[in-house]
Image (tube, rainbow, N blue to C red; front, side, top):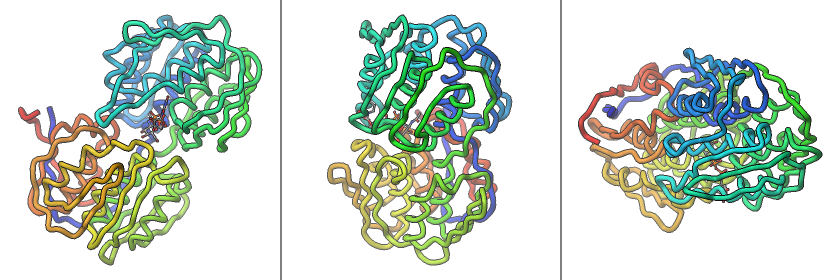
Amino acid sequence: MDKFVVSGGKRLKGSISVSGSKNGVLAIIPATILATGVYHITNTPNLRDVWTMSQLMNSMGAFCELNENSLFIDTRELNKFEAPYELVKKMRASIYVLGPLLARFGEAKVSLPGGCAWGPRPVDLHLKGMEKLGAEITIENGFINAKAKKLKGARFHFDVSSVGATGNMLMAAVLAEGTTLLTNAALEPEITALARFLVKMGAKIEGIGTTELEIQGVTSLNAVDEVAIPDRIEAATFLIAAAMTKGEIELKNVNPYHLSSVLAKLEDSGSEIDVNGDTIYLKQDEDPKPIDFTTSVYPGLPTDLQAQWVAYMMATKGMSKVTDTIYTDRFKHIPELQRLGADIKMVDNVAIINGGKSLSGATLMSSDLRGSVALVLAGLISEGSTEVLRIYHLDRGYEKIEDKFAKLGATIKRVKTELI
Ligand code: UD1
C-alpha cells in the first residue's frame, strides 16, 4: 500500500495542465452500452475509478482499453448485464450501468452499493425513476434486479437534485418509447456533457444545461468519439493549494465557466485571478482571508471541494464556517486535520475553523477521495513532513498528483508502506 510524504512550507509556483473529468468520463463509459460499436474517448484521466469502470464493462463482455489518456471501447460483444458486488463496492458510480442496460437489453442486475465511508448514500431515486419508465424492480440478495420489455417515456420529478439519478434516467430515456420529461434534473457540467454525448450518438434531448430535460425516445443510437471535459474538481484543488501557500499558478486545459462560484470565493479570500480562454492564472500575495463556504448543487459550490476548503481556511487568520448541505456527514478529514494542530469544531454539518494555528506534520489516515487530498493540502502548510496513509483513495480521482505538485515546486513522495 502506498503513502505520501508531504514536505511542508513550500510556496507553489508554476504551470500545469488539468486532466479530463473523472466524473464526466464515469458517465460517458456506461452510455456506450446504448449503441453497439467502437468508441474513442480522448482526454480520459488515467486513474483508478476509470480502470474500475472499464473492468466492469469488460466483465460484461465489452472491450475497454486505456492507453495513456485515450480510452478505446468496443461494445459489440457486450452480452452480460450484471454489475457484481466486487466492482460496485469499489466504486458507487457502477450504478450508472442500470439505465443503459435496461434501455438496450431490457434487463440489469446491479449490486446495491451500500453505505459510503462518510455515511449513507441512497439510490432510491434511480430505482423510482426506472419504475416510472415501466421497469419492474426487485431487490434480492443485495442486488437490484430490473426488467422491462420496453421502457416507456414518462414524467419524473427528482425530489432531491441528484447527479447520478439524472444521468441514469437520461441514459434510460433516450431509448424509451415516447417522451420523458425530467424536472429538477441535475445540471452539473458532467451531466450536461453526458447529454451532449447522447445527442451526438443520435438522442433527442431538449433543455440541456437546465433543470428541465425533455427526451424524445429514439429506436437506436450510434457509436461516436468524444473528448472528455476538464476536471473542475482537480482544477479547483490546485487553485486552492496555490492560494493557501501564497503561491502563483497557471492552470491550462480548464473550463473557467465550470468554476465560476469557486473563483468568486477564491477572490473573496484575496486571490488575484485572471482568466484567458481555457487558462486560469491565480496569484495570492496577501495572507488569505477567512471566508465561509456552503456547498450546494451546481452552479453553487461543490461538495467535492468542501474538504479542500476546510484545509485552506486553516491557513487564514480568523474564523470561518464550512457547511456541507449535500453530504451532511462528509467530515472524516476533520479529526485528521486536528492532529496537525488545527482548531476546528463540528456543529452538525458545519465545520468551524479558527485558522492561523501553528501546524506541525503528523501521520494522517485517508478515508475518502476528497478528504485525502485535503490532508495533502494541509501537509503543504504544516511544519516538517506529513505522512498521508491509504492514498489509494486519492488515486481514485487524481491523475499523477505528485508529478503535478512537483511541477509546482512541492515535494510529495510516494512511498510503499507496511502501515495500513
Ligand atoms: C456525484 C459525484 C460525486 C459528488 C456528488 C454530488 C459522480 C461519479 N460522483 O455523486 O463526486 O460528490 O455527485 O455532487 O459523478 N440522493 C438521494 N437518493 C438517490 C440519489 C441521491 O437521496 O437516489 C441524495 C444523496 O444522498 C445526496 C444528493 O442526493 O444528498 C446528491 O447526490 P448525487 O448527486 O446523487 O451524488 P452522486 O451522483 O452519487
